[in-house]
Each structure stands twice: as structure tokens, then as C-alpha cells.
Image 1 (spheres, rainbow, N blue to C red):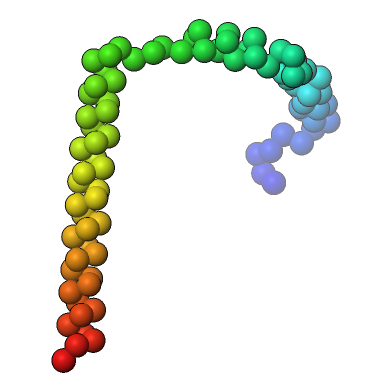
Image 2: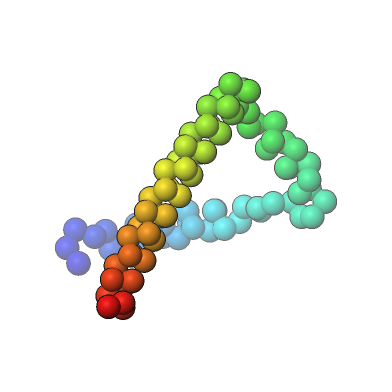
Length: 87
């Protein structure tokens, strides 16, 4: 292992950093869950009505294109199978 710091001081420093982060308490239990949800929801940047119309239109257009593509592939595959299996 060339280039790796293997002295004992670097190892001890790394272990000290690991202990600090593991000592932190995450979450506050079941009682604190819903207040934390409300707090996080206040941080959300909600889209405007115009943005929602644009985003919804994009999703619908993508769905129509994807559906047409899948239907076309299905139709062509069906025709191919029919050609192979019928005389």
C-alpha cells in the first residue's frame, strides 16, 4: 500500500472522527415525527399553477408517445409472429 497514511496518529484521528459522528442522535422518536414532517413541508418550494400545468402536459405527452411506441412494437411483433406461424 504505497501512498496510504498508516502511522498511528492518522489512525487515531480517523477513529476519533468516527466516534464523534456515531455519538450524534438521529431523529426524536415517534412523538417528534409529525412536527418534523410539518417543519420539512414548510421548506418545500411548491410549484405555481402554471408550472403544474406545464409539468402535467409534459407527462401526458410523454405517456402518449411511450404508449404509441409500445403499441407499434406490439403490432409489428404480432404481425411477425403471425407471418411465421401461418401458411
